Image (cartoon, rainbow, N blue to C red; front, side, top):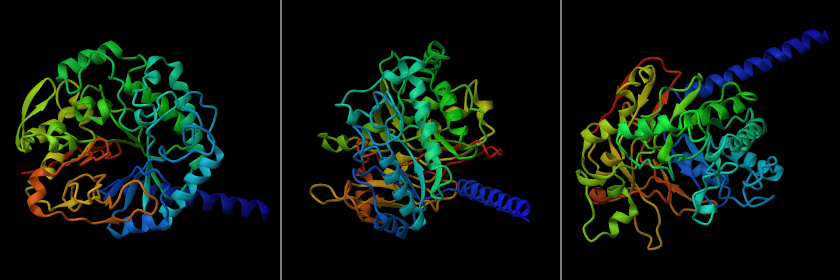
Length: 412
């Protein structure tokens, strides 16, 4: 009877694992609503309950700002010399994941730092480029993700690992941000198969995770801070059946960023706005064109087997949406006034989830209250987002598990 019991137990475990993974795949088969959690203190159960009460279903969680029990950098201890995870930090993270799961919130875990790539705001304002200087410098990052995936394997709150937030291997090279496609592809040809080759870097991280977790969806940001045009120089999607590609849509940054409001005459949308080396007319047509860049040009056929969900930050910031509803998310500033970070409602047909559908009422504190804020409609033309506050108005998701090529973008 004992061998039969063991076989039945194994079968039940296999069925549980299969059903859990099926639930994760089902989760990403449709747009979801959620928010960033980039807080300085670990959020508690009340935090996630309040987020869930807004109708959100997930959170993009980074623990990098939390105080480590074992060194300068949370989880890693020391990003300069990674020697393994800090057990007490892992326990803290698991408690947070438990609270999210109890509240019915799914989690995408995203680090702001990796070994030899310390986040700028934790590095004295200096951009850390060590990771991109040699293949040997990639190995600690691979070890970190292998260790983390093993430590968190099977946690029911997790629905994806976002392997690194807004990488910029292009920084410090001759390639300008938002250079034209020809310049980007020419630059990529000079770094291809080298340590600054971001697709190749991911091909090292992905197997490290797969050694311990074969099915967890992995979310990949392109270069230049997850810009859509930086994804356009990638030769093709990577070969893994569970990948998600995300784009952080700040463009046109000169008009959507917080510093714009301090100008004597702020830039508006739609309008001609500085972009890249010159100025460009930004409107719904330009936004749609910008987001579709990977599906054009010599490598376009490689991307057409993916399904794309998209929305535009510029369009939602101006409240100029043709079919969908729009709402503003308000957050406390020092003057306790609406900062006007805006997002689209995830009820929009064909729209991606956004990371700012709900925003913290007051940022950076434990037990922060989430609310479905509404700013007066007249504020819409001056709505703004901030790269400093990780305001991401919309993300573009290409899911390689979806084999039907679909493009839907509904903006005015």
